[in-house]
Structure formats: C-alpha cells, structure tokens
Image (cartoon, rainbow, N blue to C red):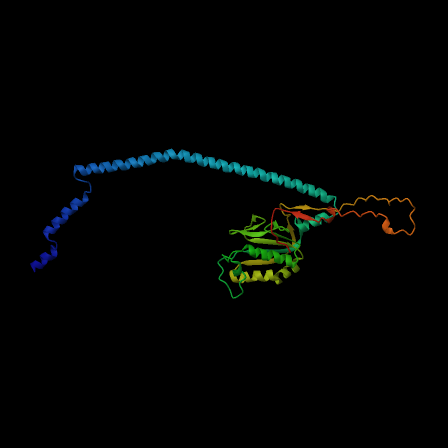
Length: 325
C-alpha cells in the first residue's frame, strides 16, 4: 500500500525532475553566454540599425523630388483644364451669336425656315408626344420561355441596356410616326449615330447615363399605341420578360426637345435666270422669201439651270451614321 501511495505522490523520478529544472533554467535565458556570441549579436543589431537609418535618409531625400513631380503634374492638369474651359466658353459664346443671327433671320421669314429647322433638328420644337424610359435590370436576367433576339448580336451582360436596344426603340418611334426624337436630352437628326464604346452608350459621341429617357413629338396616345404595336414595342417586351430590362411608355401633353448641337441648317434658293441675248438672223444679199424654212433662222439657246436651282436643303454635322425614320 505504501508503494502505491509513493507512486501516486511521486510519479516523476527525481532524476527526471532535476533534468527538467536544468533545461528550463537554460531556456529562460536566450542571450548568448559567451563573449563571441555577444559580439556577433551586437554586430547584427548594429547592421540592422544602419540599414534602417539609410532607408529613412533615402526616403526623406526622395520625398521632395516626388512632391515636386506631383506638383508639376497637378499644375499641368490645372492649366489644361483652364484652357479647355476657356475654349468651351468661346464655343458657347459663338453658339449664342449663331442663334441670335438665326433668330433675326427667322423674324423676317414667313415661318417656313423655322418649321424646316424644327423638323431637321437644328431648332427646338415643342408639342405633345410620348415619353419612353428604359432602365437596366435590377439583377442579372435569368432568361425566359420567349425568343431571344439578343443572342445573335453577341450581347455580353444581358441585364444592361445596350446600344442596339436604343436603336430599336428610336427606330420604332420613327416608325410609329414621331416628328422629332431625343435621347437623354440629345436631339437626333439625320446624321445622328447611336453606338457603344465599352460599357458606355454614345449618341453623337456623347456618353449617356441610365436610365435612358426617349422623348418623341407627335400625337401622344396614337403614337404610344402605335409604338407598342410595332416591332420595337414587342422587342422591349421580349427583353423585359427575358432579362428584366424595364421600359415604360406614357403620353405627354407637352414636351420640349432642344436643338441638336453642332448641326447647321443651310438653305439654298433658286436664282432668277438672266435673259440670254437675242442673236440676229444672218444677213443675205437677196431678200428672204416668205416661204423660207424656219430652220434658216438662229434661235436663242435656253439658259442652263444654275447649280443653286438644283440645290436642296442640307444639314451638315460632324457626326456619322443615321438613326432616322
């Protein structure tokens, strides 16, 4: 019984206990005990301190150079912005002068030029119409049990409105009988183009931000119904059912569409032809008989139509492509 009590009370042999105490005493002291070890440790600490000091000095020396380069870049950017702002102000001033000159010309006109400018897109237009709003899907579309008109066009993210969608919608508005169309405030003309640049949609090289608001001048209720019944209206229903792209059409009592920027309306009229000189009949030594042939006399030639008489109304612009009825 005493042996069992001893084993329970002293399970570790005294020799093992002494060795464990010696090992613990050595482990608590991690510093080298010899002079050589202490010298190596001192040299290591000195080398680390030198490296840190050199790095800090180099950083402080390079900081002013980097700051100067940054300040120079900021100054260049600010100067370029100021120059761009000045050019923009000059463009706005020239545009105001052109509009004033056009307004003076329209005051002396019988209204035909103003109507032509509104129809061509170079003048603002006001009247009833429809408002079409197209928005991106709230989430990624999951598809549906309908035909997929977008797969053939190579669409990537099918939950976002693409340039092809706006092209379908604009052409559908023209087809429904719209007299004028604008997209997010950008008036469309015969030279307007709707295209994509990466993920952005451009109208006449101007980026648009969703939601996309299309305004069209025309008979509001009839225009809205005709748009919903044609191919563009069906297309918007398909992409809404398939990809969650939302679109709403509503008739409006009064809409105002601005004039297209960067487009000049040029009107050419006919010139009154100058009377051609009459050439006399050739003189003969004998008096002509009354039965002489009419071909013996020289007839005056009719004046050729001038180039201005063949000219028509033209609109010039820097844009390319077309999104017209």
